[in-house]
Amino acid sequence: MPDSKINTQDQCNLDIFETSDYKTYKDGMKLIGLWPFENSTKRTLKRAFVLISMITTLIFMQVRFVEELNHNIDVVLQSAGSIILSIGCIAKFITTFRAEDNIKLLFSRIAKQWASITDKTECKILADNIKVCHPLCTFYKVIAFFALVTYACLPSFGPVIMNILSPLNETRRKRLPAPAEYFVDEEKYFYVLFSHGMICYMLVCALYVIIDCMYSCIVHHTVGLVGIVTYRLQNIIDLKVTSNQEYQANNSEIRRRLRRAISLHKESLEFAQKIETTYNLCFIIVMSVNLLTMIFTAACAIRTLYYDKVESFRWFILYGSIIFHLFFNSNPGQNLYDKSNEIINTLYFTEWYTLGISRSNKRTMLIMMIRCLRPCQLTAGGLLVLNMINFGAVIFFKSKGGSDCRKLIFNCMIAAITNEVANQYSFIERKAPRKSFKDLRLCTCLYQAVKLAFPNANDDDIKDGISAWQDTANTRLKREASGKGPKRAPFQPIVIDETLNSGEESDP
Image (cartoon, rainbow, N blue to C red):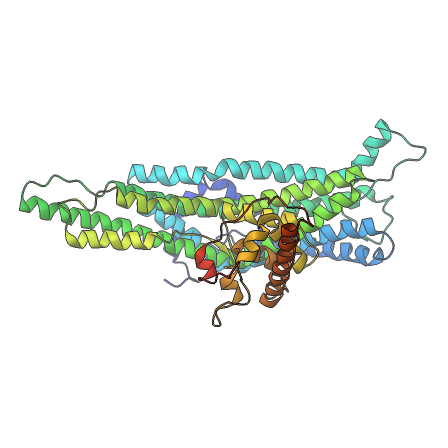
């Protein structure tokens, strides 16, 4: 069946999306015009409303940004933050509805898979794995609502509250949620403009929450499929062999169970690949915007901390929300990775190596073990693997900060690598001629963090940055040896894998 076409017979199986496990997510998708089975006219009208609302607000903010560019830096920063968020949200929405055919296929396959699974235990495994995402999705909604109310309402109602708690000689002026030029008197039409700003912020919040929660639900459905594969493998062998006839019958049953498990495993891998194909462009854009916004909001929060604590609090709220958003999108991929990792252990403990198992069945199990050595994982455009390890690593490296590519590399390396380690290895001068620098990089996460923070940085920029850092590290080491410089306590020494060095160890 082609990816772009869905058999009309599949429509009968969509009742699964009316159950409590899916209905909330389905209703959210319908609300913003992303439910692929809805009437096309309704979808188009809803999408047009969302895009027109977002784009018009973006234009108003950009006009205000240009007007204040050389006059009020605080307004410029506030406008820039809102503009970045709006652009990321619009990009997320457009890339999602452009992948409508793939999303329709995903939902159709979910319905088919639920219809094909008849065993009660397997149905329970699938349902339980989907329920795993519900608490985090609920918490995500609460965090998003809190961030929305705090970030949007503080400029408008914060001055009113402060006028009561700490009055001044003059009344503090109320501000709109986001600086924008509406070409009307803001004081006279304040509440109308405030309502418009709140609607736009609510749209931004709703788009992020609905799309991310549905993504989490789809991925956890895949986790459930892998869980069923594990369950089938756990019950694959029933050794009660007392005669040759029983031996053949037992191995025939094992072969049948193996085929069922392998078939579902293959289906779950294909389903995960389809998820990545559907969302990879969306996630690489959103991740890039998020990481850029993290740097921007952190700088703004520190800048305003000493003279406007309310504004600084707004920036910290936004910064925390972005980190949680990155965590939320990494969590489903981590769960899928962990669950797929269980398959090889389950296969090993089925006692496949014992007597009573035919050679063909043993070979099949070994082949499946080899395939499971490479666990299933999701990526953002093939650049960043969505799991908790990379989430923590990127947050660590991004926390080091840096205004350009070289400064970011210096800050990360100084915090993580000792001078002695830097002196023992050469990553630049002795690289293999046919390999790119990215293949010989010191740390995958460092390379990803630099590329995401500075998309225009090429491999030569990163290579030059690390080469320059090595020179300074060698200089520091010589100073420490001569007693002219202080010794630095490393934050976290990294154990360098020999495979990254390719045996290219230099003389100390």
